[in-house]
Each structure stands twice: as structure tokens, then as C-alpha cells.
Image (cartoon, rainbow, N blue to C red; front, top):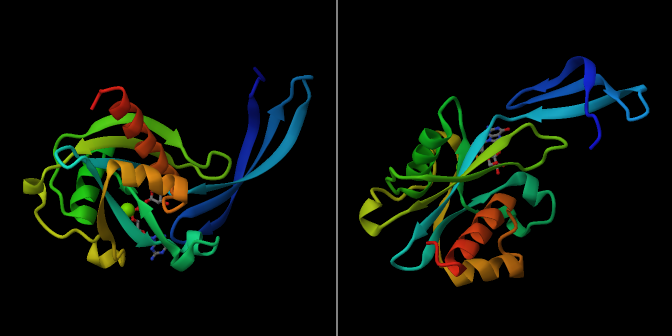
Length: 196
Ligand SMILES: Nc1nc2c(ncn2[C@@H]2O[C@H](COP(=O)(O)OP(=O)(O)O[C@H]3O[C@H](CO)[C@@H](O)[C@H](O)[C@@H]3O)[C@@H](O)[C@H]2O)c(=O)[nH]1
Ligand SMILES: [Mg+2]
């Protein structure tokens, strides 16, 4: 294992508009003992939570679809991404955040959520750590249409797919969002090993 020690860290603000972008300057302790000057741009958009909503009775998953400008700029037709429900913590605990996001985006009122793992999705550039959950829903828990917070112009569509269709959509490229692929593969492993 390499050492990884750094010293003399300073930063310069590059952008502080919606999120925050800083350029960090530091010295990295190399294996040969020398201190190497390095610079890295780091995007701080806050930590987040994501959840795979599972309708056990119907063997289906509840997903969302919304326009994502970064994906549109990188070749996704119409920029519409199919994703698990997710949102930024905005000062809440990951558990409280994800319950709120589920209600806001999908219209399900959920209380029990199970943390399954945490992940840095873009560790070379983006500070964000994502807390991953699964949760079970039933029809009676649907209290409104969802769609996202009106003041956030989210325009979220709520979708439901059988497990097998959702897995196929990873192979066909219809699901290309990393957090969604991770959670669906988690479900597949749990399902195949009889742990659902
Ligand atoms: N006005 C404005 N709105 C923005 C901007 N950037 C993002 N937003 C909006 O801010 C809202 C944030 O919604 P959340 O539900 O809280 O977050 P999210 O975008 O679904 O998820 C975040 O975390 C996920 C998990 O890692 C990420 O996958 C996702 O990219 C994002 O960072 C969204 O409506 C989004 O469109 C911006 O520059 N300007
Ligand atoms: Mg969201």
C-alpha cells in the first residue's frame, strides 16, 4: 500500500453558485520520500441518499424518470434517465432524507428503510458520499402521485417494472445510472440467494 500522506493543503474557490467547486493545492508524500506538489479540482455538492423501492407482492421495483442535463450532454437521447429514488441530504440524516425523498418523488409513505452500503460514486472529482437503502412498499402506502417538489422543477415520472425487466434494462442500456445499477444488482443477488 502506498503511503497517501499529504501536507500543506490550501484551496481556491472557483465557483460557488448552485454547488461549490474548489481547486486544492497540496503536497503528496511519494514512496521515494519526496514531496510532490499536486492540484485537484473538487466538486462539493453535498452527500446524498438513494433507495430501491421493492413491491414484494408484485415482484416489481418502483423507479423514477427525469431529465438530467449532464446525461443529455453526454449522449442520452432526450436526457431522460431511469433512476432509483434519490436526493441530497440537505442537513437531514440519510434515513430522514430518503423517507422524505420517497414521499416527494414517488408518493409512497415509507417508514422502514434498510441501509445496505455507502459509496463514493465519482471519487476523483466529486466529494459526495451516497448512502444506499432498500425499502418495501405496498399499494396502501401510496398517498399521492409523487413527481418531485414543485419548487424544484423536477417533473419526475414514477415507473414500475417487474424485477426481470429492470435487470434486462441494465443489459439493454435503458438503465445507465450507476446508483440504480448497484441497487438492482444488490436486489438480484439477494433474490437469487433467497434473502428477500
Ligand atoms: N436551479 C438549479 N437546480 C439544480 C441545479 N443542480 C441541481 N438542481 C436541482 O436540484 C434538485 C436536487 O434534487 P434531489 O432529489 O435532492 O437530488 P438528485 O438530483 O435526485 O440526486 C443527487 O444525488 C444523487 C445520488 O448521488 C446523484 O445521482 C444526483 O446526480 C444528484 O447529485 C433537482 O431538482 C435538480 O434538478 C442547478 O444548478 N440549478
Ligand atoms: Mg432526486
